[in-house]
Image (tube, rainbow, N blue to C red):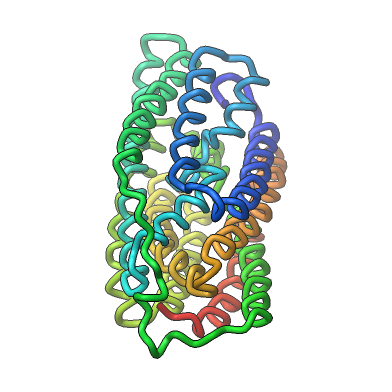
Length: 367
């Protein structure tokens, strides 16, 4: 987008619109997914991505690029998930695994996601070299060819997954088969919504425009950013595995809280760094600490209400993404005025509030 002349306000607005629309669709699809074959939703998303990538490859029209970026989630990776169907994807995985292995499997799944994103980021540095030989805008559009290629492979692999849900209640220990009344579950879901609103507000000011922050503050090119983000994603993949062992020692709630607190400190060190090299190091450290516990958080969320896992995941995703969509546009305005600090400070304040509330609430829902 920067290559074809978009400024920070327009880029921020696009990210906000993309997150808001995907968050809303995610919630609506999550509510209806229990009635239909979840596998078909995920297969359908692969087809949608292939079509969007093909359109993006063949056009430089700003309006069309904006539309397919919103639908396909281009530019923000979607955390390696299936866009508006990400809730259905996690819920489907939840159906296929035993309750006792939930934290470990979710953590392993996220480790593989981050590893794949690292490889993808590495591939995305290629256009920087191609731009030396062909028009830069054309070189960067070549990224969409990789999206088409990998999603064809994804489609094939998903067709091979056996759709055989496990009845969770049979796998839960008798000591854990207490009946939770509906009012308690509804209260828990409401608190979950409030918690993720705080988290989304925090991340919205920090994450979506972070690569652009490096570009504007340090004039980093795609190759420099590729190295930073590739290493950080590989490190996050490793930390997702390490979090499995931390959860066994400390419990999921304490593991998430301590790791994300370390990530918050790393963020503050990153924005005060005088060079891109030092800022990149602290970003990698933040990624290692902050995102390696996603599997633990997903396991905790599905444990709030075992019979309504899809609903809990939908509320979790919707509340976070809806509030997350506010940040990019505001951050883009700050960037346009060459203020590269304030959005991150605002995000850090929301993150502190989130961590305190998170631990108080989730310490009762260990997995």
